[in-house]
View 1 (cartoon, helix red, strand yellow):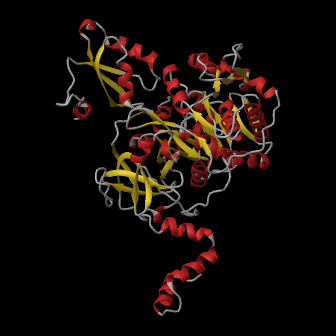
View 2: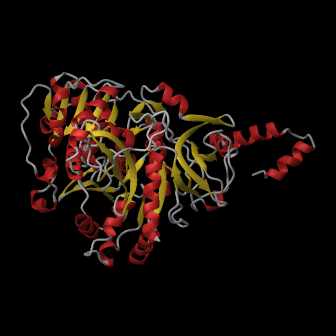
View 3: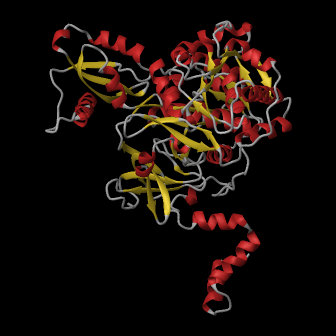
Length: 600
């Protein structure tokens, strides 16, 4: 291999030009060198000395779809456990077969076509995994929606995305009935989780899993078991790496949720990236406690285990005692979670060191893990929590802490082929290490744009040095070693147990209550959830007898469980600007001062 100094010598002595020299190198080393030159030469390199050892800084992604990962794994490990679910299990061969059968049913009986957006509306279960990959095999795009969303919230997503077909859990059909009656949703495959769980383990099962299969006689409903019993085989695969694969929804600057368009290629970037970064193997046993509709759970608890051939131990609902028993009995060694879930797990008085002795990799994000909790984790397991950072727009991680050199309460360093910068959020000027500004990212996992939101797309990106960077809306800083830290949010987003809550949306729902004259929502610190939702409310004059508890109870029925306000404070008036806009920042600052006074 010719060294750099040799190239300088050749150029200076006019034996060969620098341009010609790089052409020769590309011919020798091929496309890999070209990718490293194009991506790496312009990136900030502070973090490269701390990049995980024994892995390259760049990854060449496959020209295949997510479904291909499952197909290859099923050929490699046909008889190996793919999914364990409350006492039952299925192999990779069985998983692939059911994916294909459901895909064929979607195509031939529900007439799903390439490019269609198909709703996936269910809790963690084998059917979620089968449904997800069946939609992909039918050449369609998955629209995974939080099962905690109410009927009104679901209606927005379905109409915004132009959805006509769905795969759903039977306990959620009530939220879909109006959409079915009005003809918006034409066909739904209905799943009963109990079909895949063992009756011998019923005590561990959440209510939704224990529930027996229901009959649905209404037109347009298709029972899961009957769909598979039809034994359809799918048409020849037509989707490619650049076709739309999934549209996870996120909230944005307008307060309305937006679908993030991800191709198979963008999802593969983080699937293969996480696979290498966290040393996933076919002998891993991965605990799936994060919701699979969420990008972190989707990539790390489903896509990566399927790529590697690892066993997925699926929990429908979080329960720390069930998680403790499961880790011990199944010898779980890989667990990607969020800090609030980990805090709850470690607070279990039944937890013993031997219960978690099998764990080899513990990673996640959502919010910074408190230092005291991180220290307790290390004392108990010998492990350090490997924190990461990402968004729905980047289908999980853009940053990860190196497993052998993590920093607590840190976002980590840029992942494979990610170029991250800190800019002034107003001027767009790039800022040096140590300065606080907006985090912007360029990388292979960055989404294609928001679905049907051309104006949002225009404002969500910025060009630096000829490269297109996504504006995360998060304020952070980079230290001298290239590690990134969160400082604050440009957006008003509230992060409750890893779920993003948009205050404007909650406020608009609160205004539906007849007693609410004005409302302003802010996030306040919460020991278990990281942040929780607080609403300042001005009551209408004829409803002054309304209590805080009444409004909280009402809100529970109007919005998802993670969104409704846990705290209500009545005010005679709310601070306003001269133009009549709510001064939410002032209320937020008051809450921060209260916390500061308590600490003092």
